[in-house]
Image 1 (cartoon, protein in one colour):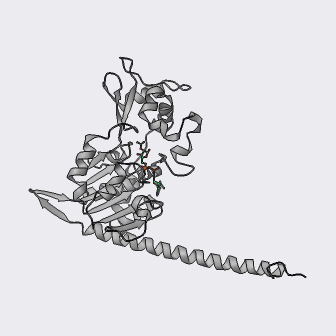
Image 2: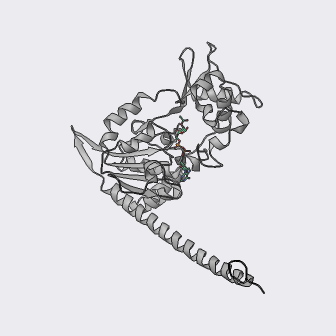
Image 3: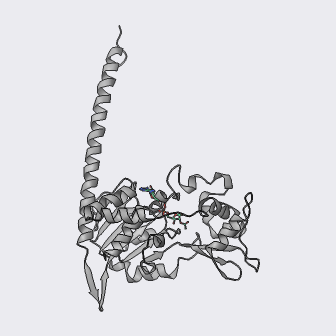
Length: 322
Ligand code: OAD
């Protein structure tokens, strides 16, 4: 028997370790209960806000000022990877392209010199058909029930339309993969043209080329390119008048879209539905906004909100229709 330098008998360590483990389990389960309770409270609060969302009559049009801002996290449940999730996000899986840095694959300067990596990625990610997620259908329900003013999205997959959200409600801030344009003569192409080129060889990545010889690039906005005019006009005309903002599935890392969260009028509820806090939701101190955070999985959040709103069976029916 001996005492170590901390004056503790070795056998006591084991007892202490066992006691610590019980305590840690207890603390973890209490913490989880607290987090689940906070989440349940947040779901209830957001559903109540959605229900009471104002309809404001402006020049004979009934306008509902609720905005939804979405990012790649909205489509991960459809099988499309996001960009920044550690391990599964695109930026962690581009080593094989030998890029100077992961984001180069979406930089217009790099693309002009070497379009191959981008089309290689398209061949891997965008040639198959994807189906909308439950959360896409939740946004559709928001529209059907007159709660949606605009769905601003950074996503290029156009799953919003497949879910049935009206085209005039969606602003694709980072462009779309549905159409493409020749970088030399500006001729427009449909996405089928890109698909055909990418399908034309099993072994090689064929860069889609126009009859003039120019590279045909999907109409997605690359770093270094301007955002569509519709983004700016939406910011000016509707975002600044929002009476509620719901942000879904985005790290809020890329501007100017991330800046939307700070453009809405002071005092309105801003909701983040995302696996982790992002952007201004990272800070938990009081701001001039009413911030509500719903953590965990987006699909679960969509179902929980739908249940709270009495829309669960409709959401399930829409989702199962596909
Ligand atoms: P990110 O990949 O940066 O962020 C996606 C967020 O969604 C992360 O915070 C994830 O944790 C979260 N997420 C993913 N799946 C989820 C799930 N099932 N449940 C809950 N949370 C989930 O994607 P964006 O913010 O959309 O731009 O990225 C913004 C822009 O950066 C993209 O439009 C793209 C990229 O570079 C361009 O390429 C121009």
